[in-house]
Length: 273
Image (cartoon, rainbow, N blue to C red; front, side, top):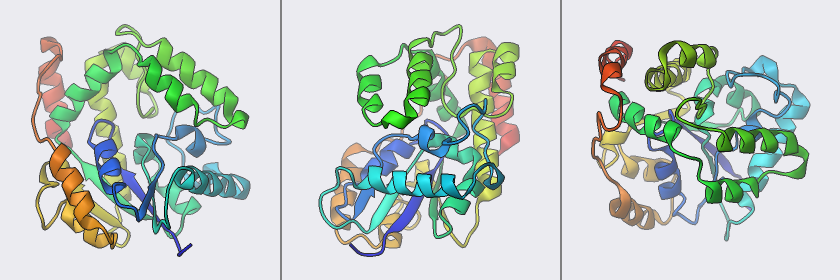
């Protein structure tokens, strides 16, 4: 096996990270972790009520556990000689510096999408009933020694209702914001915390920044990433991308009208890259 490159796809929930991960993984050079694995990143910190973990929150044993777990999960179903390990967990927007401690050699792709579209999509995700078939499929990836987190994850997924949702990255204070502002505005605050935290951690030496709306631009989109990752079968990735990429806005969609002014103001105040 050649020396592996560890690439981490960072982006707020509902920004297109799953789509981009699976698109790049169409290459036989890329071994992907096919699900978000928050339980791996939170190993040793399971009781922490939020996902904002830093380098100081993990010890050397945890570092080794995370490295081994991610490599194993990525290569578990991969056929061929992988060159790139690709992982994306949306809560990682809140802990990029922790990733750098675990993987000093890490490379990052930061994907950002129009905040209005992200919030609308997140709101639908927060308020829809749990997909039980997806839940059962994902639980297959939980190792036996992570049963406590698996139990919490299943309970959280199955108890989600429009009156009491908790979905996606848990920034500090998210429960208070949910009680104070309601679901729709908390979706916007979640996006804000995610992108601001990720932007602060962007380093030009190890991070490629991509905008979802520009993924079809040959200079700054998927074509750039194919070249950056030195994929030997880039045409396969390009074909997969062309077949599935959609750039449509659903704003304001199902969002409550009373929340729209506050959401728009928050997105505007956060600004864009």
